[in-house]
Image 1 (cartoon, one colour):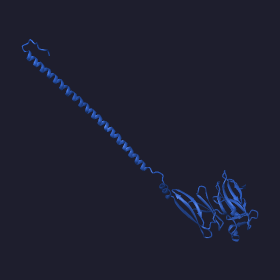
Image 2 (image 1 turned 90 degrees about the horizontal axis):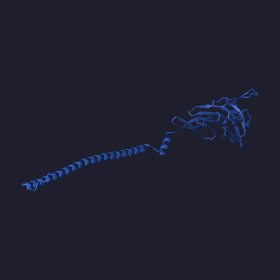
Image 3 (image 1 turned 135 degrees about the vertical axis):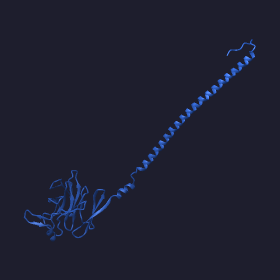
Image 4 (image 1 turned 60 degrees about the vertical axis):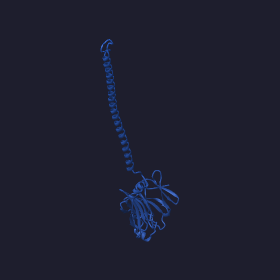
Length: 277
């Protein structure tokens, strides 16, 4: 826009128009700047708000996940039952204690206790009011062996309640060729020790004490062995003179059974038929 000449007759009018045009241009420029800036700011504000919303949703999602994880942990902790005394008591409650009864030759009753837990059965002990019965429980606790004091019998029982007499019912003397029956010997000598104090060995046999093969009133005592099925009774060797002084004293490091008699220790080695000191 050129400046009018001062020599023009319309100079004043042209200058006035020029000023108006300048003012209009300035106003247009200001308006354009204002509305353009507002548009730019509004657009940026919208984007900022969108980003804020996105960040807010992400934060809320993280917090929600944390809450869920905490809730899941608490649930797992509730469902995980620690081993407490109550749990142990529950286990004990599932264990049953039962017993078998065995009637001896003189009519007294022996109570043989065992426990049951699931499919497992194990012998616990034998109760005898007279305290005369000698018994032993196998290492796996599946069998119990005891003597019937009155009849001089050896009785083997399993955890299912099956009883088996392992007694040698007669003895044949090869020197005389005569057979001696148990019942007849005991009838005229009730104190005779035919078969007493049975005990398990680690080689699958059973040992017991007897005065066989001799029949004197105050005869010596001998250690005998027999198989689980009651077969193959064999004399092992002299073990003492007093039944009350004969005790079983466990096993040595090789699994050989020890028998103590009058302060003397005898050993019966695995599968052997002789005693050693």
